[in-house]
Length: 425
Image (cartoon, rainbow, N blue to C red; front, side, top):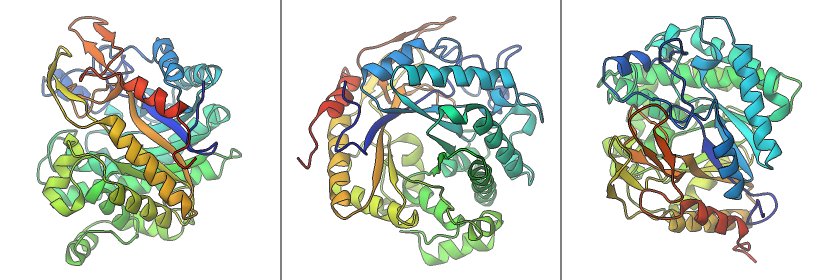
């Protein structure tokens, strides 16, 4: 089965794992994240068993192979890796190594995503505001590379940190469930970006040659990340940028100033995440968290790729694509479908790759979204996986679907892309 497209250097990939997929989190005797209290109080839906991926990964490993993916980005969980302060669980690291080996045996090369913003419960819901958290994260990254580095082609340090910061401190949609605390959100984001830089140094200092990078947010939230790293933000009014910088800890900016790769060894561009920056800060924030219905535009996607390459100082670019097929109820049944077409969006992304490659810019891979629906910001309501899941109440009450919630064979779309001739041929 063909596992690359456009040419041999550009790969098709998907995200896999995380809350609501892995299972075994926040229950009695299980590792606890900062979501635990909210789950127990009924503020959010419990993650439940998910698709039991951590204990029984076979179904999704096979699905990744059948979809023709060249790579997967496997989410790890800090709460599972370090369930008690200062105590890395070597058995958990060993289990992640086993899952990585299963993908490799299936012909799918894995990378790791160390954190999507959620912290171990022992760090507390305000943990990203603590000055010691970035160094702790750097040590965690070192432990992952030491145990699993031989099985990985790369590591994503953090995933969409600004989305997490604004969900937690501005929108009240994630721990610590605060609202309108914009300055604390920026301070938490500064802590997360500092953690990314400590992790990159830990990975760079190892004997392993790993691709490493920050999977940033889209729209103005991504520009906020750039601002706090000392890069010039696009589409952000100068006075707003000055106000934020003057009231936010400059730790990440100072660390980035002494780094030759503040974004890592590869640059990330997030697309398909809702309203564009021109629609305003409030619209962009809510759109990024809720995923809008607008389709990709070629000019905008090309511009983002050019910007990503420029910020990455000519390093290769990865594209992360987000897609929501439908809104579902708590039983996993479809309530409303969206008109947004994954196939149309990915075709635009492919054409954008062709354009920037003709200009000499390097694009490493296109990550076509989630392999399977996952629990995000405390709910199962949004369906975006290449595989759908019927989530029924009760222990292990789930069923993988061949189609997504809109009735489209989403994995089949990816298989067609993987087998298609190069758009430039």
